[in-house]
Image (cartoon, rainbow, N blue to C red; front, side, top):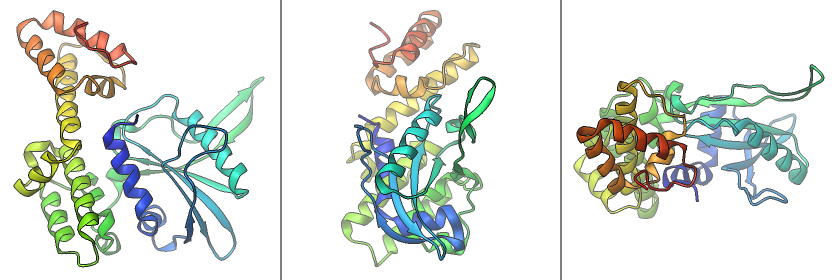
Length: 284
């Protein structure tokens, strides 16, 4: 099962295709035609979003993937998704990668398969780095469903979350359920970017009643342990945060205590946990 953080972002992009297209393409965005099935033919995998769009000259599919952590196999998976969407929709496909945070930066386009020293297959794809998007643009500020993403803007400080929360609460075109969903996304992204201490009391109350709170607490503790390892000049793999967070906040609390009392033992446990793909306890 994908982490809750990934699922909440997937839900955001799937529910608001028009605003998402503006984020990707700006004023020249193609016209949204329909959202396509995200399940892929002959596969148990699902894309994050598949949008059929058109311009004055062509109709095509936009296959969108969100990345919140580095994934060395990402380009191969994107190639697989792109081909499957093309075969099902019988349309040209524009693959788009939305990078949520800088540490998600991995393989850069194009992805090239070489044989006998020659490029035989090339996949080019569009990369959107959310921290580089200028969310002060009036058109983006007017797109209420995108306001939670604005806290990822590298130019934004914690006050952006307070501003975005007020805008979401004042929006008259949102149902109660939609407003709550956006506030949960805002709280999740604010906690990830600035830490849970920067949440307003109202956002904190919403988050504590949601399933995202425990995952966010685990992620913050995982980042604390990664910092501990770095200060001890130990390099952990890029996926260490995901694997540590999967242990849960309680197990990570024990590791943090161990880091203070028995640093060498804690480093050994961290190495084991970071290598584990099954998410088993580092103390086992």
